[in-house]
Image (tube, rainbow, N blue to C red; front, side):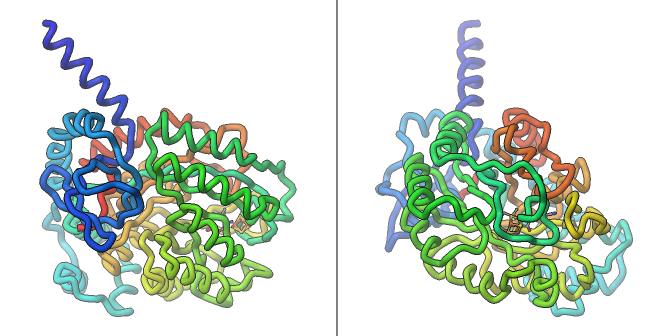
Length: 445
Ligand code: SAM
Ligand code: SF4
């Protein structure tokens, strides 16, 4: 009886500790700043960005070692994972099988090329984008999911996002927090951002945080540097998502410890870009993404789908440009009409249009992480699940305090508006487990 109770207590303790989004692994070797981390016998290469030494237990995010963890804590966590790790893999393997579905010879030929890891040409991509038949769509998604599983196994990153200011100097036609929109504005202080990040890391177990805002020039470079420096010390991967700002600021934030940038180019069609992002410059945005990559940032980039006059070819070009920019993570989603914006009456695209693009991105760039964004979640209550089964392998959980979240109204009807962070985490973990995904981010094979 006592033994049973002790076991239950241990499991409860582990679940508490394991409200975290990465599994520790043992750093077995470091060579030229590249570490090898062992996860239950699986070896992954990671970039060193911590003082950890060979023999230490570490956490990695986005393929970067972000912190050390004491051996005794790591072993406790691993004890919980040792069975779960393999159980989840089994579920994922099962779900990643491709059914024998009826499809046209043309589709089967294209998917055969995908399976042989051959690059698809423009016509083939257009053919896939135009699929409508239910069975053919199912086959498309299953093939992408199968490829995701072969390449990434069952790892799924879950990042937290903090929307720290809804002030913006820009007037993007699609965005509900654009400068000319008459909404209540907020701006979190440096201390508020830091304390929220600390809570996210210490109490909720996040290992990667996205700091996002409108283009708000009222924070000084020094303030942002202080925020990043302090949060980095918590042992977390920091993404910055602050729009088109000076290269020097991006460099300062890199030096302060930020290691990833989330900056979409929005559309590869320069004419459309000009129309929906007045007074901003396509080349400048692309140049900034390239610069961030060059100085060492991981890049999360992509586009918004459903801009008026956008063609199917534009969408294919968007995918091609995301790949050309060497995105580490693909971030794209549907334009969701926002109240009182020039595009408030724009027709919303449907979930299958997005799922097809998730699959196409997986075919085009098998190694990348692909995010199911919250805008996708507004299209269908099951969108997260559907996205993860169509080739995606990343999610974000919104950590913005409730009082601010409703003011960060970039579009109407945000899916996470009324859900508490704790409930969101619980539901996300439940979903991931049901799909056999481990909320890990264990670098590259
Ligand atoms: N200001 C920064 C920028 O523009 O990169 C970061 C914040 S901005 C709100 C983040 C992303 O929100 C943009 O890249 C854009 O694609 C997306 N977004 C804005 N309005 C949207 C809408 N109505 N529907 C879907 N996504 C939207
Ligand atoms: Fe500002 Fe970004 Fe919205 Fe454009 S998308 S108005 S830059 S917050």
